[in-house]
Length: 215
Image (cartoon, rainbow, N blue to C red; front, side):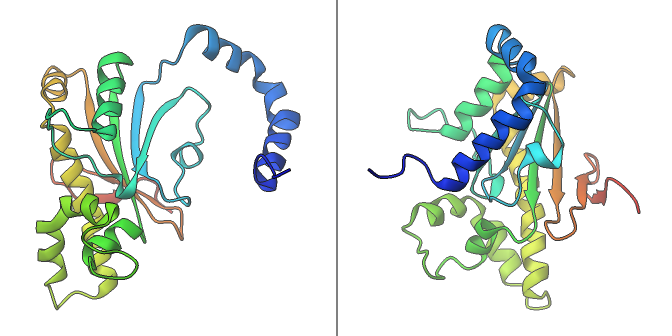
């Protein structure tokens, strides 16, 4: 009989049951009985190296997390098609009533690399990732054409531009624009360096990024 789950997942679950669950059993019961009431939504990349729950040392129920390739938010398009990211945003804002939305980017993002190198193997413009990353086409072409920047500089620049892009698109959702204007919803941008663990936050006025914790 084939294994129902990979061994490392079963081992991790066993550790959870034996070490963590006993101390948080009451929390899980309350979450099951009373539902979730997170105040913050984090839109992060699906990269396995950047887990918001770990980065922010959060407990179950603390943050509502959406993860997709390159932490992108598409523009508001009520066209009857399938929009999983927009659906999650709508649920977080209109049903859960979150007070903050954080776009969390990261260094060495594979999706951003794909946007800068759309013809690189194994991707092609016809792939799902290629189509998704085409949302950044204008910015990717402008950054990629700058011959005075190194490849690493172009990568880092587009990672941060993508955060600003997603924040702009969030504001194209009428219900988000209305709540932000009313002071009931705040939008934030952040970027984490995988190698160092440094978290950089975006200034809402200037758009510049600065470290959140100084040495």
